[in-house]
Image 1 (cartoon, rainbow, N blue to C red):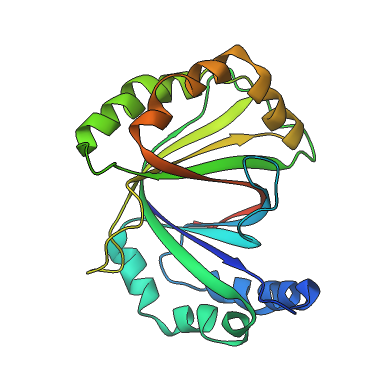
Image 2 (tube, one colour):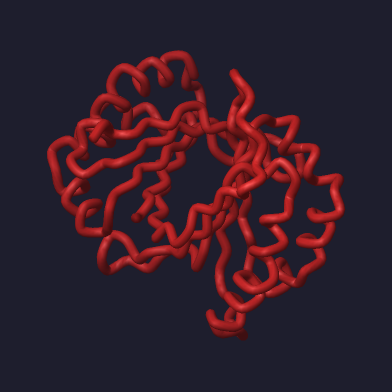
Length: 227
């Protein structure tokens, strides 16, 4: 499966309520008409890793079976409706990343989602430093960092991804990406004061990569196409 993640901002002088109305009334229906779309997640960014304002206003994730399905959707009139109409004129951006979803891990002992809980997620993207090889970075990430992340208390899902060059002829802006999800903002914040988090902070991953760039957001809706 491949995931396209789009994120964007509000231009200066824009009224958020007007953009939100255009987003829900026009953009969302257009996205969900795309042939081959399997899942569609709505994101609202809430802060940066240090507690400051987020880099982006909103974002979304579009899931397809493979790159061919994504390419077909991007070549369709429905895609133009998504981004080239009134909604596209009202936003700053967007920026696109495309990833191969290698694994979506759900801990067997993960607590049940509480009724009314809001999914809170952290996503990071990173590059391979110029003086290192991809295999060197991946050995630290996959063999050391990933097992540590999966010990975080309250973890609901951990997704491991690798960036794809898209569209054809353009290099990806990142090497890999990962996302961790929690049932609520409270559960998410609490994990940073735990021994497992201290372990992954000191496991050598951050020193082995260029970056990472990190976003924190709410997953406001998860839409799945009916079979």
